[in-house]
Image (cartoon, rainbow, N blue to C red; front, top):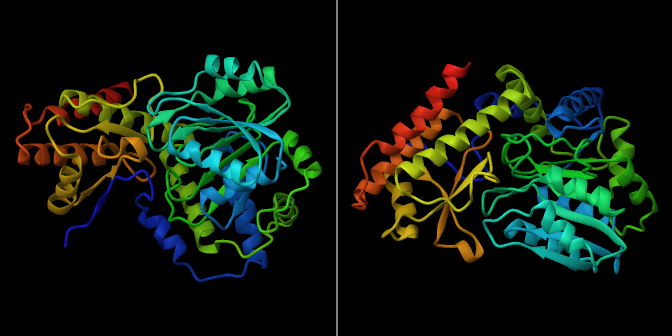
Amino acid sequence: MYPNILRHPGPTPIPKKVELAMAQNMISHRTEEFVELYQKTTQRLKPIFGTKQDILFLPSGGTAALEAAAVNTVSPGEEVVVITVGAFGDYFVSICENYGFHVHKLEKKWGEACTKEDLIEFLKPLSNIKAVFATYNETSTGILNPIDQLGEVVRTHTDALFIVDGVSAIGGAAPKMDEWNIDILVTGSQKAMMLPPGLALLSVSDKAWKVIEENNTPAYYLNLISYREWAAKGMTPNTPSISLIMGLSAVCDLIDEEGGFPKTVERHQLMKQMVREAMMALSIELLTGDEYASPTITAIKKPEGIDLSTFLGHLKKKYHLDFAGGLGPLQGKIFRFGHMGYCFPSDILEAVSLIEAGLQDFSYHFDPGAGVLAAQKVFLGSLRKE
């Protein structure tokens, strides 16, 4: 039986080394062995977040960590700005509205980024904003928001906290939490971090901790002060995802073996460019422009004259190549090519080759091999620069 070639934006493939690490004998989360694992692993994650702050583990998906960031910092009735450029920005809107926050929604067309000019103009009539929420990498559209610039706007034009969803970015893009004025940065295990779902990671600035300490949060399981208190002892307040943390230690090993996190970021940039050049060579349009294109996922418009749902089903059934379709208003209009985490240039060449095979099955007009050649040129060009 052929293995499924998973090119989704999450969950993503798991390295064998990580699988073996997660298969170790179970340990208790109230032992010296766990304390050592926790402390060493959280320390190794700081460069990936671009912070000197501690990293906290929540035994949950990334959405729970987003909820924790909201409920621990803002009280019902307080005003917040939520920047949304797609489906996962809308998640933040829903979370904030469910907790009774007064939400000002800065909404951009799907496929566009939020620029610093957009945010400056949006903030002009507003005052008393408690927090600004943004998505670093919008998984539904393949947009990478300019979080560095947005963070500067928040710092210079408000006293608000800047809270960022980095779920499909961290591990593949290089956030600089401390430099970019990010007060809470969140990610999940199942995307560029090369793990199964079930572990959320977040980091909190000193400024945010002061707000959290004064906030009358109704949270219990998601109470970040509790996580901070237990983190000081090298533990978590509740039973953590022990096997996933074992696997996360192996993920850190793999990043070190690649040459450090900057090399991992370079690989993601390379794969992004390979995919984009391949699709352009096949005359298949991309949803986003180059300036704000994601290094972890590319949103690709449906090939002209082809029913996308039928095409994606065909790729999966005949060639075992599994892509994600579009969400919301983009359903049936795009497919999403995930190239994050345990993915390499050879995987891009394989996927592009199989896309070409599928296009030929659907009598799509193109020069066979054009996409593979374009991707290969990008790859070989990167090798010459080394």
